[in-house]
Amino acid sequence: MSIFSRLFKIGQSEAHNLVDKLEDPIKLTEQGIRDLKKDLDESLRALAEVKALRIRSNAEMNKAKFKTEDFEKKAMSLLNSAKEGKMDTAEADRLAGEALKRVQQAKDNHARAKAEVVKFDSSISQLQSNINKVKSMINKYENELKTLKARMKVSKATKKINKQLSQVDSNGTIAMLEKMKDRVNEEESLAEAYGEIANESKSVDEEIDAALENVDATSTDALADLKKKMGM
Image (cartoon, rainbow, N blue to C red):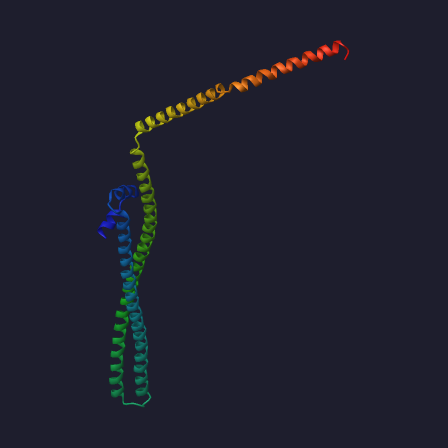
């Protein structure tokens, strides 16, 4: 519990700073919650035991009250019997005296049991208050644990990305890109050169055919003009 208390019984911001420095804050927090739950179980068991004692003392108190009333009635009955001549007066006084002794014993038991009930009620109230506090702490720290796990996940992911970024050689990357640009420029220039060579590689036959097509077209136009003049 000492580590757990050190972790959570300080301010929330300070707790987060401390958690960041711990080797394994998740396991540490989980252990602290397990310790709290163990304390809760012990408190619940103690509460049940005190309630059982309170029930027993309350029963003794009620029993003592009944005996007090019962022996008082018996003492009065004995005295009435002597008064009515049904019993010897001396014997009635003796038995009535014994009954009154029982009455006093019952009153003492009633007072003792009543004091115990009051004491147990106080203990039950205190235990219940502590149990409620522990339950509240467990609920709070379980929520803290969820947040802590989420923070750890984000922290690990961020650490991984930053580590990867820190290992990137910016100069080397730029040099590689420049080489790629030069290579693309070379490929484009080479493609253009091949295009020019293709245009210059027409065969002589193709050139002759093209020239004849132009001549034939010219001769046809001249013949048409001549026929027009002759009225043909």
